Length: 371
Image (cartoon, rainbow, N blue to C red; front, side, top):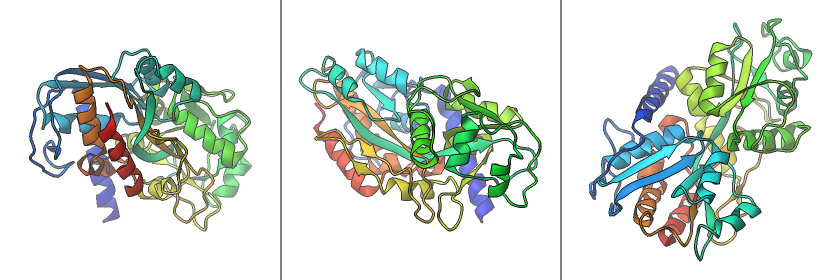
């Protein structure tokens, strides 16, 4: 049964990737409801599809597979609006939004204070806010021939990604994997070349739990290694490079059939990167945003049984007030759908974690007030 489930999840994730050519899709108003993630496009319930024209958005590549399916599902319900989301990376997405070029942005990191201040020039009478929308584990994918069950911890990962551990049979890795046949093979770490919220969250974990020598940031600060653009880029490099290791959202590992490391967190058993295990960690998050801003503080050092600590939450960055009149209806309609039970229920099969109920309720209430 477990194998069948994995195969089913992989098939769904690959299907999501196939949707990627359909970023700009039309949609039509309907109040009919079907289950999300089924054989056809889901029809969102209780959504007024009164937006017209093209809605541009960009940012996080970690949520790309979710966005592909959401756009496809939305297209099954609403005509007259094109939703075009470009997975340019969190940093680029926020920059484009703050320049007033997009209706909303996707970011795997909450806005910084200076970005909120700058947003007031775009959000007339309001400001940009963080709306948690997609949760999930950041998988540590690897390509080591003959090794299909690898355990790592934060300290070892910090040394690997700072080029301090150079061979896969290093004593530190051996200690975590007694009995494993680790080869005398060069470790080839890959990191993101673009400013990335995934990098920010991954290095926050390394800093909090593993003594990472650098400050966490969207821009990679580690020493050595090789770079590739986007989650698709680094996961592709792992797939084709013997000895490679990198970090990316779980659906890329699932779609690429890549091995992922379990984490020794101090719990009784090493923790696997799964949606359910990530949900356990995300449920410990605390809201640190004020007012309409729903930014979260994640617990990267959790030792709870079955809680996978390298998680991210992707935010949709939008104006709480002062949205452009021509894009407000479609923006509000689309954000209402993706935060709805229909929208969130489509996530799990793709390797994402739906929002915990308490957080989802706050997001829906906040989206309803956008003006």
